[in-house]
Length: 186
Image 1 (spheres, helix red, strand yellow):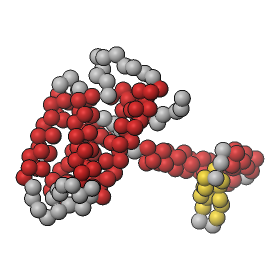
Image 2: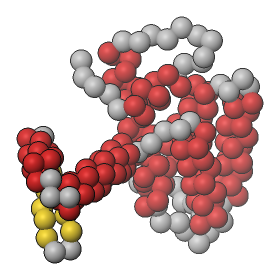
Image 3: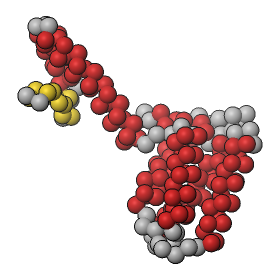
Image 4: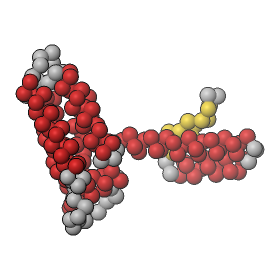
C-alpha cells in the first residue's frame, strides 16, 4: 500500500523469532509501523522527563528486574520478540512518568535512558526516522554541491547547470552566496 522506512521493516522482522514463519502483509507492516512509532516516541520523551529528588527503591528494583529480563531474552537465542515486549514495558513506564502518575529520580532515569538507548539503537539497530532521513539527505546534498562547485571551478558550466536544474526538478533549490552553496527543499 505504501513505502515503509527501513527501520520500520527491520522492526517488523525483529518482532518474529528467526525460526518462525513471518506474516508479511500490509496490515502486519502497518501495525509494526504503529508500534515502532510508539517506541521511538518513548525514546524521545524519556529525555524530556523531569526527575524528582526522591529516591524510590521500588522503581530502582523494577528497573533492575527489567534489565535482567531484557538480557535473558537476548541470551535465549537472541529472542528479539521477547526483548521488544520488555521494551514496551518501559514505554508504559515512560508515559506514566510523563503524565506525572509516578516519579523517578535522576539516577534511575539515567540508568533507564542508557539501557533503553542501548537496546533500541545498539542491539536492535533501529534509527529515528527524522534523524536518519535528514542526515542522509544532508550528506548526499554536500556531495552534489561539492561536485557542482568542482564543475564550476573547471568552467564546466553545462554540468554545473545540469546538476542545479535536475535538483530543482526534484524540489531542491540551490542557493549560491559568498559563504557557499546551500539548499532549500521546495
